[in-house]
Every structure is written in structure tokens, then in C-alpha cells.
Amino acid sequence: METITYLKLTEENFNVNSLDNFKRFQKINECWRKIDNKYVLVKNEFIEDWDSDKLRNVAKDTLKAISQGSIAYGAFYKNEVVGFIYLSDSFFGSENQYIELVMLQVSEPFRRSGIGRELFKLACEAARKTKASKLYISAHSSKESQAFYRKLGCVEASEINVVIAENEPFDVQMEYEL
Image (cartoon, rainbow, N blue to C red):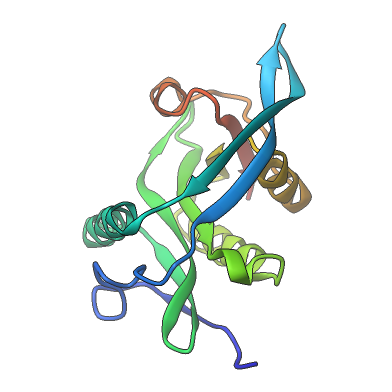
């Protein structure tokens, strides 16, 4: 198998068609839900499967973020994007300590191979250079996504960004100390 190459995403190596072969597929059976101020794992079966329109919109959003100064990285296999991550370009929190990890995705056939962990590491290194002290993550509440973030050392956010939380009300608001 060819090796995975990690590159900072730019308008030269990432475009609106870069995710055309990306497989954002996940069968979800259980999710974490906050009940009586405590997270509980509940049965919640559905499938996340992005169609070509969704993939192109995500690529457009990523390109827009890059053009506005956001930091992004991609994992490439045979010149195709099989994973990507990007950070916001602004800070928030009571001491401007947070920078948001806006997107972290790994194509379904490439999961459980360390790509997500490596992309997260690259994002953390970049975030440290911005002088942020914490990553803020509005993380999918699926059992698998939560296990991934917790394994990396992410915990529930000590401060909640209300705008982000209201945008994805079922996500778990997390942070990672840089």
C-alpha cells in the first residue's frame, strides 16, 4: 500500500472537486445524549452518508476558510484526499483561549489507520503557533466519534460557545488542552 502524505491545504492542492471520491459514510447505532445534566448512551440508529452535493459544499466551505486564513491539512493517498481537518481563523472564550476545530473527517475506507490522529496532531501544532491554549470541538455524539476524541484526550468543554452549540444541538461540546 502506498503511504499517506500529509500536506497543508492550499488553493493549489485542494479544490471544489477534491472530495468527489471521499466516502463520508457512518452507520450509527448509539449516541450520547445529555439527560438530567449527565451524558447517557442511547439507541439512535441512522446513517450519515454525504452525497456529491454535500461533498462539494464541504469542499467549498473548506476553500473559503482557507482563503480567509484558516489552517487546514489534508491526508492524501494516490493524490486523493482521504482525510482533512481545519481550524477556524478566530478566537473566543473568556480569555480568547479557544480556537475551533471546525472539521475533521476521514474517508470511511481509511478509518482506524491513524489518519485522524495524525491530522489532529497537525492541527494541535498549528493551533499552538496561534497562541490558543485550547481547541474547541463540537463533536458528533455517536459512540464511535466520542470514543475517538476521548482517546485523544478531549474532555467536555469548560466553557460552551452558545452559537456553535445551538448550531448542532446534539453534538458534545469538547475541548483539548494544547
